[in-house]
Length: 593
Image (cartoon, rainbow, N blue to C red; front, side, top):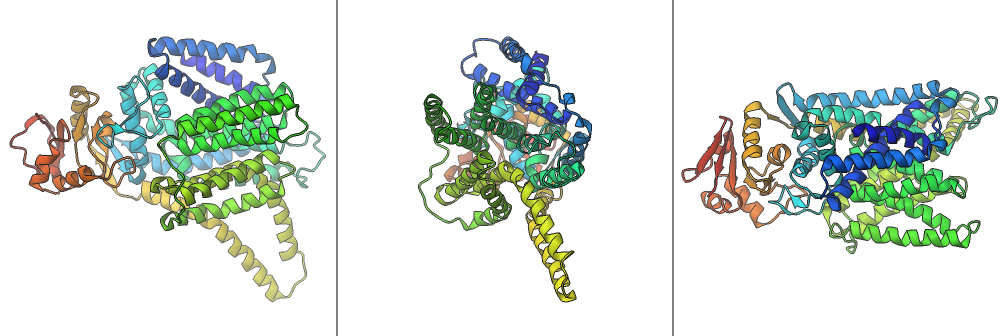
């Protein structure tokens, strides 16, 4: 049945876009495959639970294949455009660069030999991603129980995690999916990076006449090279988004596809826009249900299209009214999806988050300038960029939760992803201007030296956000604190998985690593200084207990049904009244009665 999803995605990719590169064709097919799995999982876990997963996915695969097959007359091969191979070569260079950046992280995290190794973010972002997937295996609906806060209420979207769990269940892999985490990461990179080049092909298509200059340049290779450079700048400004497995990493391909679909729809007229508009709105809604920031930006893209259609006097009154109605529905969907996650009513200035806003805001400033420059010619991308960046500042100044404020810079980064394509014509003009002023204008030697220093300083300033991105990512994921989960520890975790109820609460050390939920899906009582964990009296008592406070230990035993102790913790706890149920040397597990 997975083959049906693959076949339908391959057909759909050629229908939605007339690709000029084979790699973009495959990447869009990958994004559609992921979106089809997301949609099927959503329907199965909300309204289709009476049917078995195998049956439901088989029916869904047949449905998607039938729908795309009915539109097969619109399918176009990427090989129908001359020069696809050369254009793919530049995509391949960018793709190889990102894969090489990912290799040190993937090779030093996850399963390394017989051990499972975690550095830095793997104890946070990946632990969250993996824990919610493990919990999804044992939950027939979408997960709403918080594994980092004793199964309390979870205000985090879990559609993506349920989809991953369902996918590996269909493949017969099940809870052993962690062995494939590195392969998943490489595959997602291959299905994401080429989509940057799809945006180029849609926004600034290559002139069909080979004699015609492109952006004033005679050489097509120079334009391809500039596209690759700008795409890599977009990637490296937030390199962690593209090189290690976390929730929005696995959604970035769908997000870039949504940008391309809405950009395509904005340029289309009549019935032609329907083929791209319906998938675009559908994917935007799926992103909203799968990730708060990325989903909100996707809805902003949909809202931008509605806004432009409403005020486009060339459109019929009926069509303008239709988009007005769709716009109101989008606002309702966004309000429903974000209920309980954030409130925007607390005007403030967050000093702790300002650094990230400045780092991301510097490149976003250039994109906003390019958007202003291209407002008349590339209206959709320009307006969408401005709205997305405005959302970032709205969240930064008005959110009453620190974790939300800290994510405000991600809106600016998404704005950069939307509008970075508009930088190309400005970059070319700027290069001509710099060459003229520095190389071809007669000046005294002192001015020549100063001019070169100015250019060098400007380049270094622009490279600083990239350097910060690389430094933070590799410091955490390669050189950061290392936690090793050895075979003995995994045996104890397997005992918990096999012998405890799926809703069991395990009393374990609240500090990193968060391996109990990551490997078993069972809930821990609290996690120290963790955004998904409540910082309350229970958290304080738990920390005291694992610091050796005997009174706190007695109180803590009421919080869960099992006690998990590693070698260090065993020396602090009084376990004389507890029943030992598992002992691997490195770990002891006690049942609390």
